[in-house]
Image 1 (cartoon, helix red, strand yellow):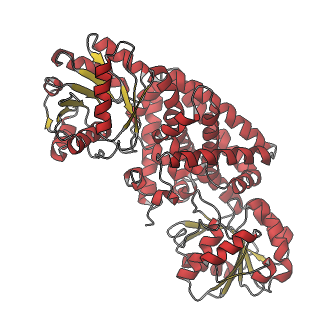
Image 2: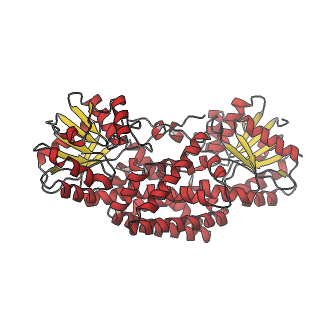
Image 3: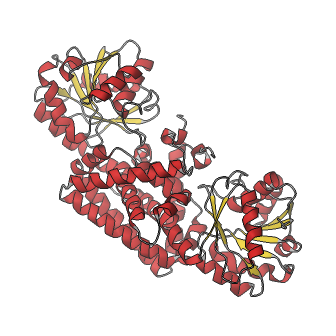
Length: 301
Length: 301
């Protein structure tokens, strides 16, 4: 692996975790970082998220072999433009955005001559900001790379090796397919969770206190997802609009069918679906993507 | 507290947990139990879920001061009829069903002369069966009692004391309000989770393998809920139909509004909602109904 210096632009949950993971697992790789928020830079320095927190984005990237943009997808183009003049020749520019088609276009506009390899580590928590990151975030999680047809193979190999060095498993696919897959496994679940949490807090006949008290019946799991970073998720829905609307259409059809089954007292249709969905859970646990302990091993208070 | 002997009919997750919790926290109270499935009875005996596993439901309830029916809500009436002839005078008959209006009616039909106090401990995991229960399940969780207008105060007090003895917090409300509140905090979240897991497994352009691999983006949380007991949940939707359809209508309106916001590129509407839902999460953690650790303290594999 030929990456000796990595610059991280944006020091929140993902950027901070990349910095910490690199320090812990790839000790020979130097890290620099920058964040647009001076308070985040200060806190990043205190926590040692990267080897050196710089005062400008240009200073952070100046000698980097790999630059990773860890900002909301709607802010990618501006972040890329801000470093364009300081990049060294041959640098790989990557990102961690949750939608890839629009990010690839934004980066190509801002950096027409750079080697761009968009990436998406499928990992996260509901927390955000410079205190949220931890070195183990990517371990046994998938990182999807979506290189364009003209991306140099050596650069793709280097970036793959970097993510594998942080404990991730790497998969390569085209941006369009990524955006459809993630609409299903991440974007629609978030949209639905945000919606039901909003619905619950707007009802007239059920108080917010009741919603909170009895949340252990299932609702609390949705609130976790619905506590995710608002700016990040706004940008995801705006930039992956087509795939999100397509999957949402399918979801609505399926929900309408279940609604009709409930109205008609059709227990067989309900039971058949509820049996079928159990097997997917089992596969996710077998694949190591979740914890089989009841309640995730939640501690009683 | 005057309850000296408790009979538990149905020895799955909830019945088994009541037995274990009684043994651990109310050591002076005797427990008997029965399950319609002989294999469950055998396993209940091996695990010691109750003091004595009986061969018939009648035998289990014969000297009980409190009988708790822990069967799917669609099976309540039959379970109650099966013990009618063996109940001792003055016994309290209760249950643990997730819908209360229909259960109250079913129990009243089967046991017209008994003291019936329906109850619902708002606690559970995605696991079911005689191996799933544990003594701490109810600790710091709410148990809702929905006594009819004619229920003796002393019996309500006895049942409240019993649940508090298992570590639960007790709330009393009418059955209709319970069914609306739980439609919001439990039934609709389950219905939505079942739906999206079904939608994801039926797509042609995304393989099931991909859905499983990238589930850490949010989808996996839905699969946990969608792995719950299919018979129990079928019965919940059939018996709490009106409240479920009412809340589902509100959810659909809200989802349609977000769909339109995405289509129109209206980022402000999305951001406003996503900010608002964060505060509910904070309240749930403050109230002790969830774990604030990132990812619930999930272990990396």
